[in-house]
Image 1 (cartoon, rainbow, N blue to C red):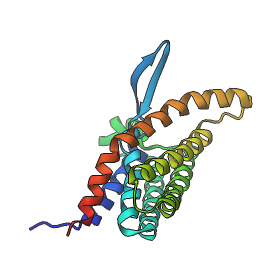
Image 2: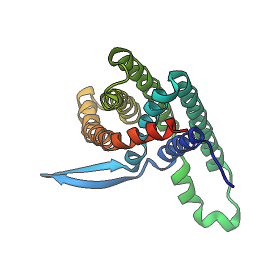
Image 3: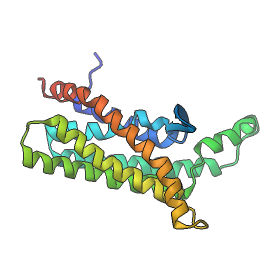
Length: 215
């Protein structure tokens, strides 16, 4: 019979979310309209909050060192995906694939700047999430997981959003005020949506902790 350890399954979901956000997150879709302003979100909005929630669930059950080890594994996956994307998009295409080569390269041809922005944002935010969660647990004890989970997520997702948006979209030919205005216009709705998704996922985090602790 096919069996898989609970932690292994959770790590598999974590790695899936990391890879999905890296390879598919460039697509945006319209959410709603406020006055004359259209609100859009990246498809990564569905998986990025899950990454931070899994961090907190594993830290709650197994401790911070286990979570940090998993984060380091996630970083290795991100680096390998980016390097492999650069390799395969630069290889010449066979004749029978030439018709789809431009589309393939468009999808997987991630620029070095966006790759670096994503990698730095992911690394800094993931380790900050664990640090804040552990500090809150030391201060509050094992109670109020919902508070510790969401506060650590809000803080780490703020850093993730700020680092990625600044590194990826700062235009050096524009004034600082123009850059700040443009980046805030992208970052504020995106960050707000990520916080909402974190709140929505809180009950599932409780279920995940209970599930992991079951014999």
